[in-house]
Every structure is written in C-alpha cells, then in structure tokens.
Image (cartoon, rainbow, N blue to C red; front, side):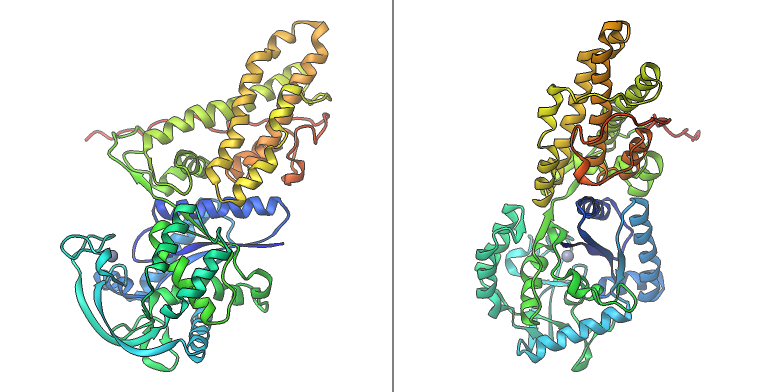
Length: 507
Ligand SMILES: [Zn+2]
C-alpha cells in the first residue's frame, strides 16, 4: 500500500519556530512508522513563497521576494534536517514545475465552468493574505490571528464557485466521518460548510508575486490556491523522469495546525472536485503548543527554540517532548522547565538508565550475551497487543496516545527490574535459570519498546538496538519473544547525558 503524508508548506515571511517543528516531527513519526510496516511511503514538506506578506517582508529588508524565499527556504530545509526528518522531497512554490502545474489545474477548474469574473469587497488582512468575514473579526475590526486593524478592500478578480460545492462537500463529510480528525475539528468544518459557502476569489489584481492566471496575465492566482496545490503538484516532478501522481495520490493524510482548517477541510477538497481530482483521504489537525509565562530554565532560557534544543539535547529529546507533553490534537502548554523535567525523569532515568543497567548486568552476569529463555509471563500479557495498539493509535493520528502506550511498557520494565532484583538472584547459584529469564525479558522488552519508539526517537532507539545486537526495525518483530537469546551486546554510552547549564558570562 502507498502512504503519502504532508506537512503544510511553511510561509517564508519569518524564521522557523517550534510550531513548524511540531508538524514536521509529527509527520515524520507517521512516515517512519508506516515504513516500519512495510508501506510505500512518500513524505512531503516545503515552503510557501508567494503572496503579499512575503513581498512586504522582503521590502522591509530591502531585498526581492525571491531572495527572501531563498534565504528562508534554506532555514526550513535546515530545520527538517536538524529534526532528523525523512522527507522525500522539499517543495518550493517558486519551483517552475509547481507553477506550471498550478496553472494547468486552475485552467481545468476554469474550463469545467467553476470560475467567473466578479468584484470582491471585504475586510482584508494582508498578513493572512485573506479576506475575513464579519463574524471572524475581533473588536475594532481586527484580524483574529494577527490582531491588526483591517481595512475594507475592493477589487475585480476571478472567482471560484465554492458555493456550488456545498452539497458535494456535505456528502463527502457524510460518507467519510473520519475525513477530518479529531472529531471536534470535523464538526467545526462541517458546521462551516452547513452555514453556507460563499464563492472564493481565486486571483489577486494588485499583486505581482505569484503564478499568473493562465487566461488573464494581469492577475496572479490567490496564494492559498497556489499553496494548497503543492500537495498535488509535487508528485509530478519530485523525481526526475518519473511522475509519482498515480503511485501516491490521493494523499493519505495532510497534517496541519487548526488555524488553517478551513482551507484544508473545505476549500481544498472543493478545488479538487472542481478539477476532477480525487480528494485526500484525511486531514489531521493538531493544536497549538502554548508558551506561557515561565521562569528561566538553566540551559534553555525562557523559550523552546528548536535549533537550540536540538543542538543542546539532541533532536530525539525535542521530538519526544512535544509529542509527550501535549496531547496531539489539543492545545497545551510547553515550557523549558517541563522539557528539562521530562528529559531527566523519563528519557535519562526511565529509558536511558534502564538500558545501561540492563546492559551492565548482561555483561557482568552473562559475559555480554543475552541468555536464551522464555519471556516472563508477567510481561508477556502486558506486551501482547502492544504493536497492534500502537498501529491503531497511529492510524487514528493519536500520536501522544501511541507514545504513551509504549512508555507505559518502559515504566513496567522499570518496575520489573526493581521487583525481580537480578543483583540478588546473581548471588544464588540455584536461581541461575530465573536470572536468565529476567535478563532475557529485560533485553527483549527493551528491544520491543525501542523498535516501537524508533519513529519517535530514531537516533536513540537505533543506538540502543545496536547495543543489544539488533538491527531489525520492522514491526513484525515488535513482539516479546520474537527474538531469542544469543546476541552479543555492545557498549552504549549514555543515551541521554546530563546537560550542564551554559556558563554565564559576567555582565
Ligand atoms: Zn491576519
């Protein structure tokens, strides 16, 4: 089966931040997990480089929009690499191949009779590059997102008959109740559709930075129409001499933040229907990571800046933290202190120490070879359905719940070693068989959780598996007892070393 997962393309009017990192991490977890299941995966991310906000930001810096795009696209590529993301392609909406394909699809929407000339008037937020409805405005005619005062703008442009897609969209939502998840977002999108859809202006007259409307070069295509199409256009040119559209379209899941729900859950499927293109299977929505008021942490200061955290603590720790701390799909607070607490108590102690203790005991009591035994019955039951449960959770895009399932087993293994006290068993020659079972169960339990943790913390999981003499990452092997004893263990070092606070310079 093919599996195509996307992040939104990130807007290049600013620097990458934690919010961007969050979606990329989540998409990478899904991509890596599906590869473990043997699926044919394509993972796309990239940058959105057209529109008024980019022009404005470039002007402020005294450079061209193209230069600004180049500058920031590099940063977003670096972010993906820093997070250890395994995206198969990085699209930029300034790619000529993308622009050409956008023009083709928009031309098809036009030729299918879904476009007309009209005049638009409304509250316009230049930073959203979008008109706002009365009901969306905040007090003082402000943009609900940017809080800036908006003005009424009027222009002649081309319209997309979004209103005629109200019924087809309602049908789509009725037939596919998991088209948008989680459920509250599905309800929100459906309510928006049912409240009545207004036609959408598809082009901009005043703007030059974009894809020209194919039948009217005095206008450029509205930046959102251009941007949404990236999910479709990328497949046509991501590989030289190969069109991947047949192989991966429709996308399995578009991961997005809740602020762009309307575009992805309403406008995007309507556009695709208008162009006779299959709609994606699913839109998965996450909430916001909120940075509240916090005291300064020793090594991170008062912000969680993804490049900095990855440099100081490693990408795995950041990947783990954002998915562990805030239930995926909901809003939640993150903080440097919260990060450091989880790093120490969960990553360094519960996982890292368990690994080093287990390896040390294997080397001390069994000459560095995992003994052959049956897994402890006490663990067997608890691990029984683990891999299936994780698959089910990730299929439902419940990343935090999936991670928690695995982490409960990490905690269980910690209790197990505490209860069995292998260091006592080692003193009793009559308990050799029991010690074999305990050591085998620990090594095997660590192997299984590490295989399952691999999508979340690829670097650490791989290191630990290598130390256990294992390299198979496939989910078929993620069962307690699937691998027998006999493997020779190797040095691990510290998986999550203590981080010293940076030295303070004397002010
Ligand atoms: Zn705005």
